[in-house]
Length: 159
Image (cartoon, rainbow, N blue to C red; front, side, top):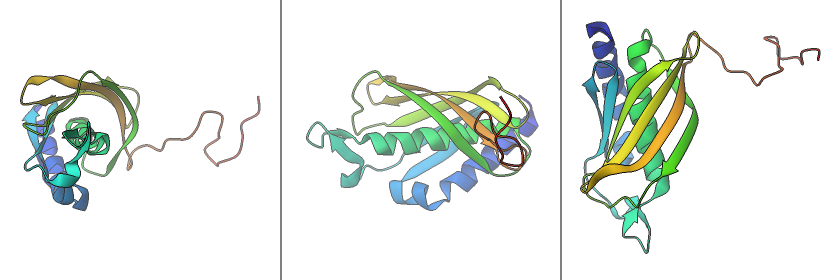
């Protein structure tokens, strides 16, 4: 990716960090490279915990962390504008402790105009990966996602 891609990641990271879900969950998003981004939980709150009798990070919080990192990384491939994570496949490799929780996401490739494939891993203070994930991020200003078999006008396509 280019310097312009890095700038787009920084802008997306700042925007994502300022959204209510990030503020409430103490998630900070930052650029990690020319085609990658990092999302970190800055402080662990009681509501972050939920697994193994509240000694581990709740899976919903981890999904929010992945979503933030993946959308920021995908910004390198798009002009300015809104993005959405439309697919998330997660592999839980081990429990995530409530210390040093970080998601690192990087662009893997394009799947068409306005569609980017992203890979991410979550680690904790022990290292990682603790969770591995693959996702698809779309640039909502450049592409729309329709179910297969649906025409652009919303009607069913003939078989």
